[in-house]
Image 1 (cartoon, rainbow, N blue to C red):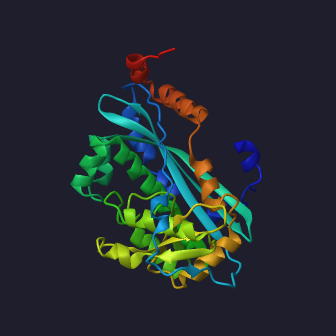
Image 2: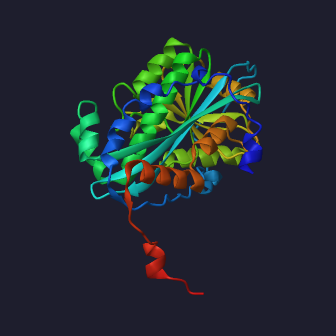
Image 3: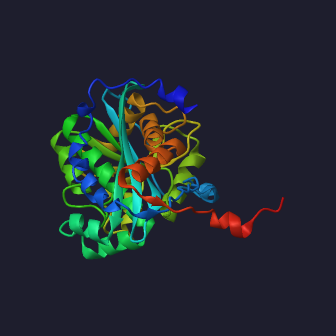
Length: 345
């Protein structure tokens, strides 16, 4: 199915128009030389199930928010959706090997216009390689966390890739909607050169609008508001829940909405950057007019997700490349969970 879907996306005439990844990959090969002769066993990546955002238990209560509608006069503009993925593919005696990839898809007037995909980039992380590259860019606490928690290491790589792509998209486009997968918030894992603040500066300078979309949330205020909006049965509408969240999240970095784009869609959390110069209702209306909402979710972000994720062939090819290029000694590994639990039938 993916081949049929992605064949509809035209190749860009120049990938440089969307993003320039050369600066990101300059120093990667340098750290990979530390893999020469290492013993390794390759790991599998595990997916996680997501719970829908809306909490339907709250649908019987009257909403404490004023329902607002999208603007009535949308206008044509470019929408740029960005997403990335990272997979833990191997471990050595003193570090971990990751593969990362980032994808960008653009649309206008409900048609996909361009796309590009960069990667896989290979990252080898141990105490030596990470300290050499990041000791002047990240707090020591963050470096220790990355080295001791593979999920944080994956997050660190994704942030690097996404911030680089977001920054380039904000610099090379004007009057566009830049879509981010997830909420708009700073992270202790981002560097000064590739941080949310830099993305917002470039966004504001070029008159773009920065928007984050989340499919899930651990905050009850968000899920309750989503449930109330879903219960209204109205599409092209939203609640602004920023004031409620600020009560217990004083460091909130964006305006937070919950929005429903079409009658058959779920409700999503939508973060609006504080540097956005346009009204939220206008931004949402323009997004609906220029992107595709076949499943109630922006197609630019959906395609960017599918373009960035790794399939088994890519993982296998990456393992073979590393083994051959660096003379690594592959150690056989078993599925420990299956070995211990076995099967009943």
